[in-house]
Picture 1 (cartoon, helix red, strand yellow):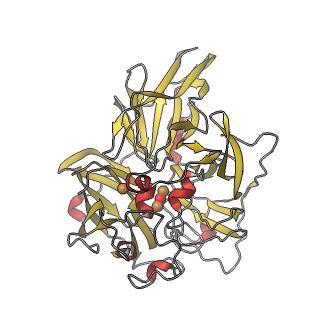
Picture 2 (picture 1 turned 45 degrees about the vertical axis):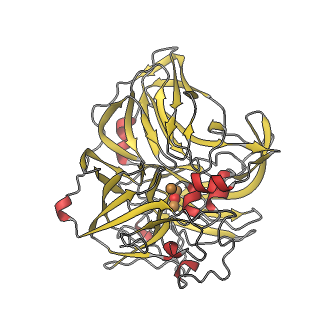
Picture 3 (picture 1 turned 30 degrees about the horizontal axis):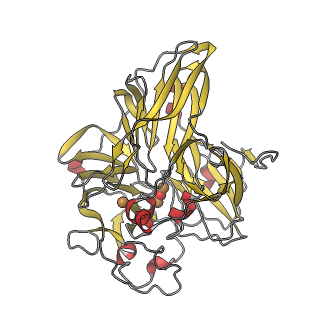
Length: 494
Ligand code: C2O
Ligand code: CU
């Protein structure tokens, strides 16, 4: 993480065992009330503009607590995370806690909240017991997400899960990857092509640095990697051609470690690797050329980071088993839906209807969503709040099924996802996580209700009648080409 020189981070991270909730705060989450949280973790986070050194030159970035990436926020399964957020930017923003299975309403992971410049907002996230992993936080203001993320707003969020015990003795490193192009000391502005293709930067930074060396005192290294790029997909591999040992996807531990030649990490996805080292050994990770239809990048394998063992190294073996994998039963599906993902090639005025589409699902139902990419470029499907299992890809059953919150679709590809709408009710979003595509309209709302209902999100501009865009600024990012996630009829979802 890069911090401004000579400036210490003033961040309060306070943990209290007893709860002191104000009587009126209502929290949703996994059939528990806030009073049942095992402990309260309090923290502050400030969004502000900061000039930082990036790849040898000063760049004016949007930061959390003055750093790039933002600070690593840590909590434990079962915690109530109370985060006092201050917006010191010159524009409105908010926070989204990507991948967390918590209420999307009220003061929780509510993407419809707006925090105006100069104002504060207290987030309260009640994390389910037994639930954890590698997540991240970023802004989620509609039509501003891509530009705010691009200019630096992203940070890791780690929730310690009980299963992490199998990783005791490893050397944990959290790495947030973000690409950037700077022009005249500023992140390069978006072009029309960027809105269509997803913006990529010319330098790829790991924790804000070009090809950092991470020193390990223990082996294996547990690398928790987050792709926080707007549009760049990383095809990760070892430089020496040896296979990777994959242990988790999108924060969810696999049943056993898997050996893979390379691993694809789309925007917003996380992968976790174990890298065994001998004393004094170095292992370099590269990202290989990958074509996502819109772009092929990099043109040849590029170094991302190196892990280097110190001369005295405490080594433990790679665990044989990681976590018990729940298998969702396709026979239990209560409802099937089908969606197509594409950029629309015409700018139809007022064609923002897709963003106002609302899918209604019932709390407790298992649904199967078929997603088809009918476009000529990759799209990255992401569903907030409810992690899913990728059941089939192009009709082929995935074995074992992986829990994910974000999945890539190549042109023409079709995936079937099993989504248990369990524990948490409320209104949230699904969208393409190529940030520009989401802003340009590849986004819709899912509302889960019935059973124990969490407080509704506050009314937002999404509830206005289709076509009514009064007061929304800007209607589209300049030059944007609207895209869609839509149902079989070409309009609407369902
Ligand atoms: Cu990373 Cu809508 O989220
Ligand atoms: Cu997309």
